[in-house]
Image 1 (tube, rainbow, N blue to C red):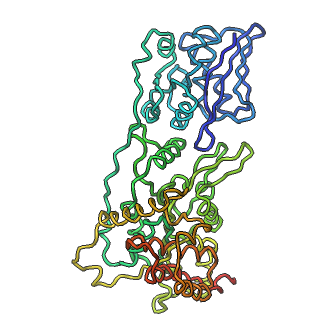
Image 2 (image 1 turned 90 degrees about the horizontal axis):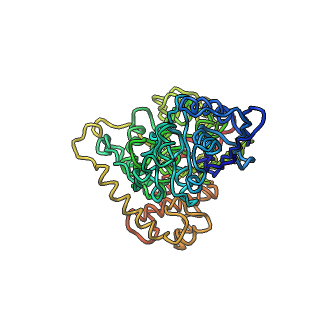
Image 3 (image 1 turned 120 degrees about the vertical axis):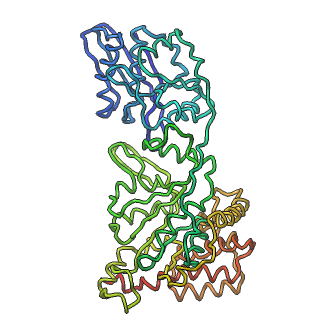
Length: 514
């Protein structure tokens, strides 16, 4: 007898519908599985066979064929165990075939018949809803995650035996009601900008960076407070909107990092990979590609401490995602796209010892400094909107008793500036100043003739690239928004130029002539 059950395969952070076909017919006893299968899917044959036997439903000595269609898409993961078991049970006439017409199933099966949770349940259920499915059969360990998708009934299953009773009507399937999408409670901040004494310019740069979603580089000697400031940037980030929340939750679901006891992610991520990270771990990859750190930082912050200590090949991977806001991995098994729209925040010392250009303390040779700084290429620097110096603190600054601004106060200004941007770009495909395409610069970053002449002199003096020129205008637009100004004024543009010119203090042209 022939049967078919709806299933899905994860590709990137989305899922693709798959049909599991089963045929049990007369012939020499054999169990075959076809359909461009990975090793773990092929192993499902033994897991399902033994699980059914231990649940009291041994396979008959007949010719059994399982086909996963479409055959041109590689099937990977353990989510096919459950639909394969149900397809066999239907072909064996244990279950009626019509109950799976508008039902999708996904889950792993243990040898004892228990149904185990899987990764990536969120995109599977979302796809099932979009296809018009009425029910989704999931492991009870994935019930909380699956229930985050509204508009489809979630049926949690614990083992094969009870599942058969449930599907045959011995138990009431309506006992598991549809649940609405939930938001997890935002985490309470344990750090605050009020704990940072001094470094007013650095804190101002952090505020501007978050307000316009600009990339930020902090340069200064060790112990100046660069890392301390970076770790507090999440405390002034705006809340996630619904689209970002769902997209980010799907990324973490595919990676197995979504808390099954919580709702959709409610806090913007702040990823801080160590400088020994491999290019594959940063960008994503594997036999069945999974998101890397730049995708786990989507809609949040990617903080790279000790930037020159990262391998140059690893850093160069960032260039394309910083521009396109997504990363595209091409593999033999297909093309995988992961969202990567994050704020890059980086911190570094100006040399190996950390005290350049103070020659009273710095003992590094000119060649050593050049080699240290040349680990960061000019194309990568061009993609960083704001470069700010964090000088060594004086004793008076460190011990002052004056109360510092809290993260809540800074965040209020950030939200006000971002609200201005959202209203300005309500008919565009972007929301923040950092995302303005070059074709829209003249429309949204207008300069008076006097300021245009000023920018011409700056362009020639600093030998700017076109990308760096546009980034200055975008930062100036953000500074104007923080000041509630509809126009970019001279003070706004001058401050933006200062954030762009600091890199020239350290990266001279001859630094690359090694």
